[in-house]
Length: 282
Image (tube, rainbow, N blue to C red; front, side, top):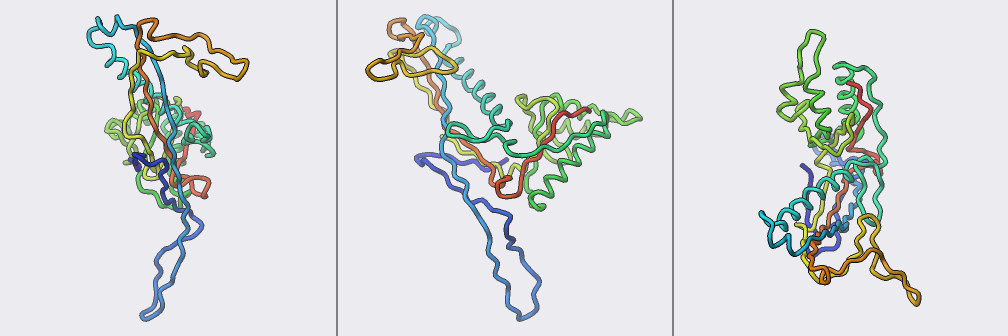
């Protein structure tokens, strides 16, 4: 729903992003009068590749005898698990640094959720998020969308009035709420709702994940804080445990993927296109 770009051979993607410090709106003018000249204010959003990577290993025997082929299964598992990892980072509140992009909720204060545990509280929360999104970017919204945990999507569909009606069931079952698409996310915490103008969300990728297979490498078999096999100068330190693929008759599959994302309008320029709340009680 947002903008999608590819790095290709480029190391940097720079996109214009508008600020709200000035307006370049048209004005009514008299016949023959001079038309006003207004200056727009723009900044730039720069995206550089952020690298995701993982290595996993398998023995030669399993690659020969497995049906279906284990390599294809492992590649698919890497893609699926990496997708979950990306989504987890996407919906957090952590700031960008040299290795990762910022989460959508970084620097954005939350809307206080209603304390009414009924359809009344749900309507109140939806109204609060919608109004905040309309007001913050001065009404200039283009493609709003909800991001919700599937459990909350189900809860919204089943909400009942005092006479037992479920007014949101049909629309939510069609994947929308107030006409805005619902993006279900299992990585978003339960009892949390995000409303975002998706048109201002931009991503840049390296087109496709890059896979490589080797039977010659020596690996530091560490999944949280791997290092080089040796570090230091005259008194080097050695990683442990290490494994020679050649010596153990094994193969390694490595996946590398370049990716980054950003918001073209954010709190940094005075207009947040992301609104959110949590601790929902309906």
